[in-house]
Image 1: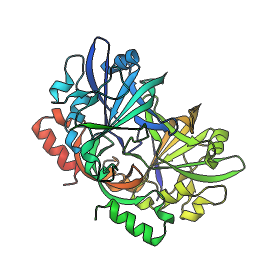
Image 2: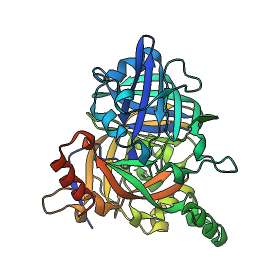
Image 3: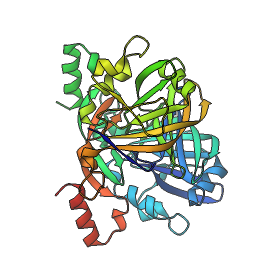
Image 4: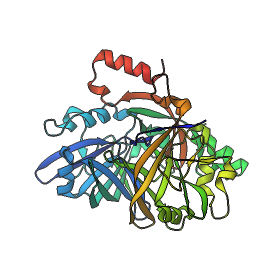
Length: 201
Length: 201
């Protein structure tokens, strides 16, 4: 094989498609769907979200110093898409999508989105102006999980969440599990047991 | 439904599972697999990668000011996993995984990984100490695509790349396309045509 060189571009994939919810004093709750989202530190647990200055949510997040990252599953489509193409300036996106803002632990203003499989409530630590986008880094101060996703032992059943990924302009479901972290050096019995678990057999 | 509150944790998902290649003057090429990777700006195109200080690749990237993000497909398993669990201090990971370092356009030291579907060659702009991890932000200065992934019209056929996602400790293939950006407001004929394209029908 050989590589063909292309112009620089944001081709990292797959990335999350997350609905970010926010609100501020005197500002109703809003949602913006973002793919420029990532984990940037494990301890303390930090995430980054990048938002264009001209987006309605930008100033809300800057004002309140809070945002909530809502992971999205198949059940959240097409709200995920609608909240990426519509602006909160002229639409109540919660109403438009039939979603409800609910209390996110540790947040004063920003709500979580009812029905999301998992939310990560973040306090803004820093904002960096990078060009087209400003990057907000946020410390995850609480995590909420849909109680229906917890199994008998209190663990999160991620298969049930049916999370979606964003891959070069399109949303995809996750398919088969190919391995777990460390599977390439796992003992044969561990490998067999864990792979069966992962693929729900 | 109701949310159950859990302790803060890095539960963002799915995220990329990318092999990051690096090298420096007097230091042989190395690979580290990372999931704490994201796009943080469109213009200029910027990515972030977060690396623990104690990882062998950390100092190499700091020294050379370069890294290459290699997207990974099913064909790159189990190298993806091996390069996440082994250290380059005591292993030549290219040799271990049967991979070859190849020229990445615009890089002086950091190679791309032969066989990767897509690489993003990055020059370090900044390093931020966040706690367990340091975040390197990098400007994408060139992109390389496996020539076998280009269709007749020169577009990248992402279906063929079979990219993998990392979801709470496990690697997953991407499944069915659920929609494209803007599908929720697309005209019926556009919707039908594009969905057929996406699912390769």
